[in-house]
Image (cartoon, rainbow, N blue to C red; front, side):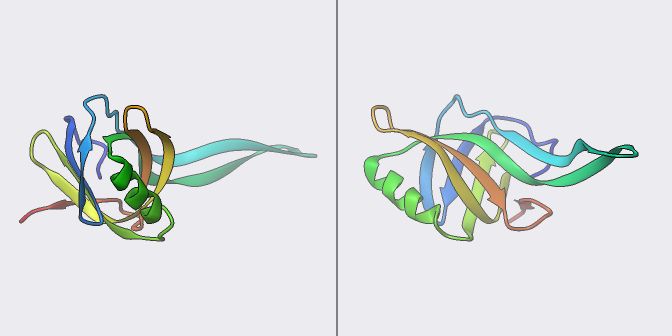
Length: 126
């Protein structure tokens, strides 16, 4: 998914499971370099770590059954994933997920989604 993607997310599919995306979903598409200083006797050196592209804070509205399915998906190393934004653009690709939180009272589940490809998710034109 590219950094110039705009608009609210309207649909999300996890391995064919079509789930509702909450209006509050705030997609932070993170990637780039993480810079830090490493001390040594001659001064400081710069250590650069590449950050993988990922989608953070994907808020979903799920049933208890969907939550169990998604929990099972979180144990897989990859599965088909796609998101469609308000403009109708669909980005997809193999991914893996981390469940950040799940609230059983209102069914809100928050995910971090990381594409398997270092290039991120690709625009589906079809």
